[in-house]
Image (cartoon, rainbow, N blue to C red):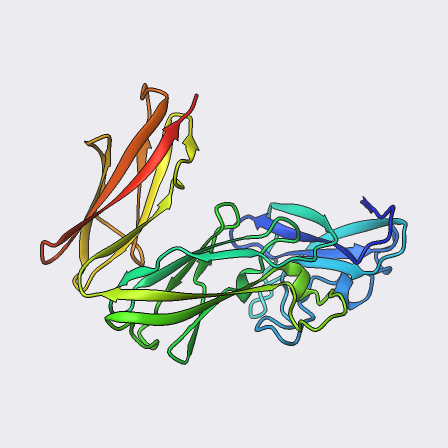
Length: 302
């Protein structure tokens, strides 16, 4: 249940996390009667015909210019469109009001190996949440959608497929676009911007002939605590990357020999590491023996 106690432009709920192989469908209701759905916007379907996932189930529902009263949310689960197998699961809902701003979006991998590297961006939205189907990069007259999105860290991963044009040596202009669920519900304010809740970020990639690497986690100067900390980088080269070593204050703490789409991960056992500032270094080695290191300062907190 959610209450509208003052005039609002929009209100709604969205599924920001769900278990694997589930399809969660929230419905936005004006009363406890499940037939009281608040129009097309109150269904879990994208109603914005300017978006690629138009008419698809997206796990968000809401209303525009709602009356001041109580509203209710009914949650159901969808099914596989081919086998009709039910797809229930656990989920986490987020309630939002007056979502009037687009997500914050930033391309992290601005220096990449020439060819078809993996592009990674960080996209976050404080209210309705990011619509993962909206995440797209455009370069050299091609569009590539995100292969994966983590709503917690905000990391969006774009492995360039074989059909996509390669990134050449030198500069390449790239545009990242990202919308939130409020944009997908088409609950917009009147104005000159046709997609006010969509972010467009233009960056210049620099393609290099050798290895290239970018830290993903931890974030710079992030405070890490607990027994272990996740270490994540994206690495690529003109030859296959064979390993990534992780060092803390000059001592090796992990080694990753297998990467998925250029993503290499490991765990740092913090243990009795002293509080305060520490320096992490990732060293990538390709099949030709070329190496590249990247530094990431962090803080250990208790």
